[in-house]
Structure formats: C-alpha cells, structure tokens
Image (cartoon, rainbow, N blue to C red; front, side, top):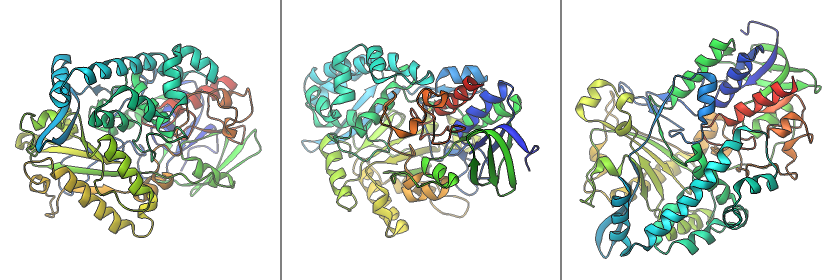
Length: 523
C-alpha cells in the first residue's frame, strides 16, 4: 500500500521515463509516488532470464541506447554506463553469384576499402562521409535542445543553421535525398533503415513519418551512435529506480491504475489498492491509456510494425562471406534483406495484407560487446546472444491469428538469414533446461498485451518533429509550462511523461526529464 493518502506528484507507470521524472522531483523535495501495474519496474527497458535454467540476462524489449542524454546520467548520479561497438554494421549480399557484403567500421581506411570492393569506386564512400558529416553536425545542434523547452519551428531551423539540410530532412521525403546522394541499392538501403525502425512507411511517404524516425536515430547523444548498455537494459532502469528511491520517491509495484479524476488543480488517482490524492499526475503510458484513465475518447489508433526476437547460441554461425569474421559482423548491426528495393517491396507486400516474401531485419550480438550479461560458464563455453528486430511487420497482419502469423514470420525471417550463413542458424541455437531451443519472438500484438504499447507501437504513437507545432492539440494551453516542455494533456495538472510526449520515443528519459522540469517550473 502507498504510505500516504496524498502526494505532490503521482506517476502512473514505472518505466524508465517515469523513474526519471520521479528521481528529479524527489530530489527537488517533492513527495512522489510511482504506481506500476507489473511486479517490477522498467517497462520495456528490462533484462530478463528468458530461457528456463539458462544464466543469460537478455534485454528482452528495448536493447540499445542512443538518446539518453549524459545530462540525465550526471544529474541523477546514475551508476550506469554504455560501451561503444567497434563495428557499425555489416550487410551481406550476393552479387554476380558471389557472397559479399558491406562492413562499416574498423577505421576509415577499412571502411573505404569495403565500399570500393562492393561498389567498384570511391564515389559511394565519399557520399557516405559527406552525408553523415551533415547529420553529425545536425545532431550536435539539435540534440541539446531535447532537454530544453520546446523551440518553435523557426527557432529550431535557426539552430540547425543549414537550409539545405533542413529542407532535405524536415520538408522533403527522405527517399529523395537518399536517391540523390547514393547510387548503390545496398548503400541506399542501409541508410534508409534508420527511418524504418518501428515505423511502417515508404521512403517517399508524404507524411514524413520516415523522416521523423530517421532524425531521432541520427541525433542521439549528439553523434547518432547506438551503444550497448553494460549489464543489459535492466541495468539502466535498476539504476533509475535506485536513484528515485534514494531521493525519497515511493515505488509501489503490482498496482494497476484504473482511473484519474481531476478538476485541473488537484487530482485523485484510483488503483486496485484504493485512491490517492495528488497535486499533479504524470502519466508514463501511451496516449491511448491516458485517454482511458481520464474517460476521454481514445486518440487515432497507433500501430507498431516489428517482430522482436531474442536468441541464445552455443556459437556464432559461420558466414558465406568468408572474408568477414562473424564476431565482427554480428557485433554491429547485421542487416538482412535491407537493400533499398527490398525494403520498398516488403512495405508494399505488408501494406497489401501479406507477409513480406523476404522479411527485412537487423541483428546484433550484445554479448560480444558486453559478456557480463552471460553467466561465467556460458562465457567459457563460447555462448552468445542474438537480438533480431524485424521491420515492416504491421500489427494488422497479426489480427486474424497472432500466434500462427508470428510463427510463420519468424520462420521466414530466419530462413532469410540462413541464405547468408554457411550453416543453419538452428544448428547454433542453445537449448534450455527443458530441451527447448532458446528463441522467443514477440509480435506487435504481443507487445500491446505485455507492455500496453498501442498496437505494439514502440513510440506509443507517430513520432513528432522536436519543435512546437501549433496544430497539435496535445500541446495544451499556450504558454503553460507543460506546453512549453511538450508534455501537456487536456488537463492542466495531468502531464504526459512517456514516449508519446513531444520528443518522446526510444530509451531516452527525455519525456520524464521534461515533465519534471514542467512541474518544477510551475512551482
């Protein structure tokens, strides 16, 4: 049971953003209660022993860190660290009947050689350097604004201070600049993938959903690097929960919130253990769940579009491209069926209601960079993890029969991977204490059921550009602190601190930080 009957702030949901908000507010001397439906904190950012009798702690849902500002780590005194991957990506392909691929990483000279061997000249590598030099400069200017009050569109454009880049990434479909910049289909596809993680769109979608997704993927940390959390993703949320508790926040798990009533000045939060009062309520859940708790009409349906697969292997599989060591290929992002035309074809097939014939996916091996997630015996025996994220798998495909469709898509995805391996992946899978292969898959509908992600959407809704949009009703009363920080709702003292806030999405803590700043600004 909660220790008090009333708090300065009640936070609904103990995911990483809710814990960030709790820690900031408690450190500022506010009385804070976190209510979490599950029996543990962490939300989608957790580490789990997924396989019976196997000492491997997998980042079951979220798995890499880019958007978490070092400012939050410093401010909250978190005992948490990330480690950089030495290889950015490897993308296998068969050309002229020969298995080959593109390895990005290992130093500039090696990457230049890999581009030249694949494409026949230095042109694509030069274009790659120029393109990512531009996104790097963009990241350095935009990322610091994410933990400041929302800029206007004009102010952010002035901060970017590069009209060509602004026009290419904020105003035109991303496919246009990709096609103008690169000529090789595989290189184009590798660039496009950052626009499609959890986002069901084409390169030329006029809504620019793909641009928004791409932007968040290339600005993280001011560099766009995606790093490995030491100890798994659960190490971050455990550190956040510890920080919140040390500051005086109270965390109650196994406690589902069922309703929020407010007159705009005070609120009552009803959970399955009773009702508590609050001056403010911060909701670390999707806008769909917020509407349900307030008794309002739900927002337009959101839809996720991914297959998440976790595996444990006795060894990494050998590759058909014998020039590349599997330990390098899988330490970065291993792209499967992610050529430019393949991605567009997979989108069209999924949009028509059929599973992609060649499902695109990307894979990486956490344990190569951070073996601490494996028990000592597994490390000695050479075991490794694999995390697979499948693209263009919208929730609608699973509506008729989730289990059967998930199994079919998993089989097709692994078969696509096998075309680039010198041995079947199944031969490398470990087995749990009950003799079952160590592999688990989650569809968008599974993520909705387990985590409350609407339609399995990992961002809770479509991502927004990181500036104030006057047409967005979610911004709330103009000039108010919640509106200034992009965390407003229809109720003045109810704030959105989850991924559905403006500048939400990904493992960032940014919405939690910004909601806390809005509360503190109002006094």
